[in-house]
Amino acid sequence: MRLDHLAIAAETLEDGVAWAEERFGVSFLAGGKHTRFGTHNRLLGLVDGLYLEVIAADPDASCDGARWFGLDTFVGPPRLANWICEPTDFDAFMVHGMRKVAMERGDLRWDMGVPTDGSLPLGGGFPTVLHWHTETPPGRSLAPSGCALRTLTIAHPQAGDIKRALSGHLTDPRVRFDVAPDVRLSAVFETPRGVVTL
Image (cartoon, rainbow, N blue to C red):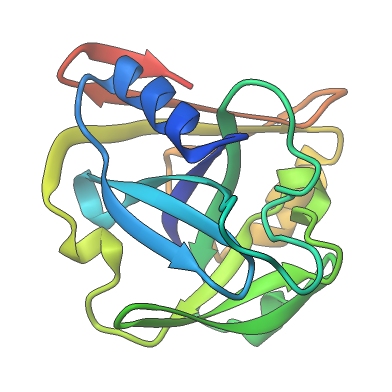
C-alpha cells in the first residue's frame, strides 16, 4: 500500500486554495472537475511522488447522490480531511462501507473506494483507497513545488485497530497513529516558508 495524496476540504475551492497558499507560500495548480460527485480541486506536487489537493463542492455542478469526502456536511474553515492510499490489492480494502466507483477527470482514469453516503471511512481515520489506471497519476506528473511531507498523524479512538489492519501493507514511516477521543488528521510539511503544520 502506497500513500498517494492528502486532501484539504473546504466550503469553497477559492477559500481552501487561499488558505493553503498562504501557509505554503506556493501556488496550487489547476486540477479539474469530478462530474460524478459534483466537486472540483486544485493540486500541489510534493516530493516522492505525493501530492496535496484542495477539494470542495462545485457550485456549478449537481450530484446524483451524496458527494464524496464528506463534503455535503463539511462546515468550518479549510482543514486536512482525508488521506488516500493505493493498495496492491484494491478489492481487499473495500472495507468500512467503501464501494468501488469508476472515476475519470480529463485523461485520468481510476477506481475509488467511496461509501454510499459519501462519508469518510471511519471518519477519516482509515484511508480512502484508489487504484490508478494510468502510468502518470498527478503525483508523478505535477510540477515540483519544493514542498515535502515530513509526517502524517492520524488521531482516532480506534487508532490501534487501524494500525494493525494496515500492518504489513502500509510501511511508510511518515504515517503515525495516535489514540485520541476525536478523529483528527495533522501533517507536517517542509515548505519554502519553513516547517508548516496542517
